Image 1 (cartoon, rainbow, N blue to C red):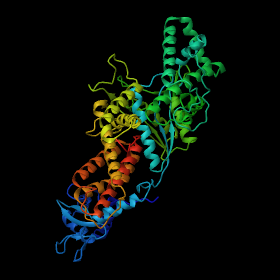
Image 2 (image 1 turned 180 degrees about the vertical axis):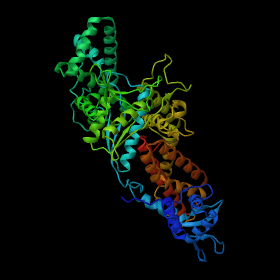
Image 3 (image 1 turned 60 degrees about the vertical axis):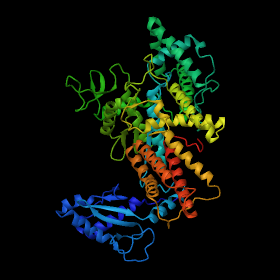
Image 4 (image 1 turned 45 degrees about the vertical axis):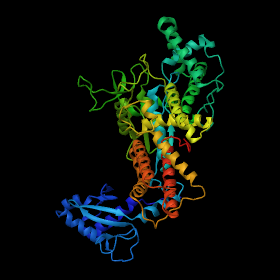
Length: 625
């Protein structure tokens, strides 16, 4: 596997070298290169440089061009080069044309040969020439955090989908990634549930496992009894919760016994812990069934809930108090912040330990940071959590910095996400005003997508098995892409009709572009894709090739900024470029055999890039649709 230097990086370096040669006083100034509508690239760094040097930007730009280029005096210039006597300035191996425009911009056009040769190098590499990060670290990603004994709803979708995409992207760029699913498996409600189950043991009348599996398999490897499905498991839990809640609210003696049971749970009582484990195991059966529908792998070893840090809470509080980071206030252990105040102007503290001796969420979150930094050697902690928790995590992170768990070598980031809205722009609810169950939403998406696939099935000759399978891939892909194509921090409207549309910025559009390319490659028969650097390229070929070449740079940006929507945007633009290419440049009926091979080469590399990009977003790419 060999990384490939992009054309943008090559051109940027050439101009940077020319800047240093023509303007030594500029030091290591950046050309500020970007893609341009007027040429392949535009460098506008000379404008700021001219201001710094108090010079005329066009004159400085002209000096840089002179340092960069050689006059084209070769009468035997190939089809890719400018004609003799045009006065164009060229760097024969990469740059075809460079000119000064506007107040001092440099417009750069690269050679057709450079485009195809660069793409050929990418095609020869299994990673498409995408380099690994120069200094990879260890990132712990906290995402997909459902609650034990509670149904997953549409609000759980974003953390799961965004987090899973960032796992794939970071791992692809060379980062060591440790997954953590911080499930809600602790709290006073378990006293009520456990006491009710002890008094009504028939309510969970099937055998549950111990939950101590060491399996490294995918969804459903918790070690719990898998003889029942997720729907049944959650139905049992929901029935139990409603019954126990009704009794808790109506029977004071049961309420007292439930509170005693909480104390027993926290004290580690063996019988109570065994019942608690049953709830966790039943819930995992359900969780894994939903994640399986989402086409996500969840490994049991990565599920470390709130209870996983119970043994650290006392020590965490002791360290915070002894270092003076936390102080006693009205009996509670608190951390105060100058910039966090309530409506009355008084500081609002982060409560680590309550006045009654109970631990707040902050104690668990801070203990998790300690564990992830000290035991897992994390250099980055990435939390994919709702934007409405931003203040809480701001306070937790600042507390961890004050005590030294976070520092220059270890930092924490919240990848905050917005709310899923209905078509009306209001929080997504059922007609009855209840939260939408996630599995119902996924089932409907697959049903809608299957109908879309069915419409095209006769023309493409799909079997019933393929229709069913592709309906699932398209439906789940549509849900994921709708989420990932929106900037995470923004709210977005959940509109299934639009999500499964063949037109516009949807995963279906991308999947059909991929399937179309695979169809072209099948129809080519024995004609193999082959790069032909000697050929002149049509504008649509150039545009497609240049966009394919940007893949690695886009991934690097997404990995550093934690913005998967930028990868989704890149893939949509790639599919759009391919559509234009397909409309304007005949592939199998091109003018010459060499042109057929070259266009098949562009098709093949585009398909590989689409497939890899979609896979990083957790979306499948069926070869026939």
